[in-house]
Length: 409
Image (cartoon, rainbow, N blue to C red):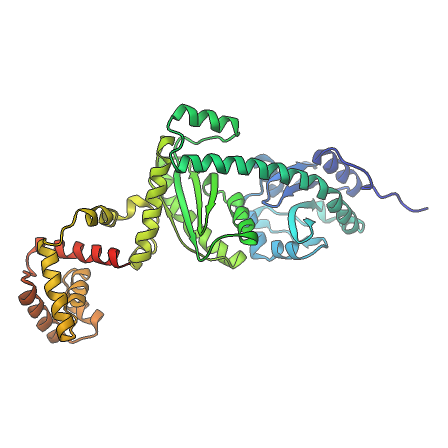
């Protein structure tokens, strides 16, 4: 007599499916979406492992467990296979022996089923049963995905209203957030990642995955604008905010490259705010950081607006600078001399000021002898009317050269 297929019926909920799996498989299971967020879980014994407990308590797989599964190649194997995958225990992150399978819709991974093999017991029926369970889960997950996409569309529309200051009232913002089930944190920053090209299709799904699994900061809202991924995010505690956001940007870029071969060119954060009518301000600050990083390579590891130093004043200074200032006249004279005599006095001055007037370091950077450098400095001082011992002259010229680079960029 042929054994009846336990999955040959409709399931009203994931909880019902998880409980049935526990009965049939004889081992605890969890059902997760594609971003490792917990959807349902079955019963388990008191001896269950720490990773399972943390997943149930936090309603998502801990970030360090996800990282371990990526490093060991488990996530990649699951994404590429219709078959269950056996995962050996990793005691460092509290992970016991498991078998997992991806729930798929054609080539797209919708979620996962994880079965914990307690006390080393290996059920020979586990693999075929998990394949049946994955197929039974597909319809439920597709329904869940449609609902989630509708929610995301509404939330993204709300986010763009914040980014463009279309909602002028704090009360109206809070009311809309409540209607959309968006919990607004006390403090926030707007972060922006710039990619090599417009983000579409598979790359967008991979970005959504990274947004969902990130736990170092809480990402509340997100939206795409061509090559820019825009996030509204927060951390707990003002003391840790800067460090966590810096680490988040570095990690996000690295993991997008390592896991998906998707290359964010650079990332940046606007200032920390608590007033939600100022979301646009934080957004524009983040864009300003990106623009300055593009023009000044030395800012490559500067991600936060408040850490730009004097660079953040360059756009404002450029707007009020006149052609007839002392520094502009000096640079004009030097530039004219360079063009007429095929020389490089402007570059020499720039490198000299960037090396804090250190003769040896400047000569090394320009690959010239110190005597040659001293001759150039004497000539540029004479031609430009510059006193290289005058701090005011040097600071004015230093900033003028930076503004020139910003304009040329």
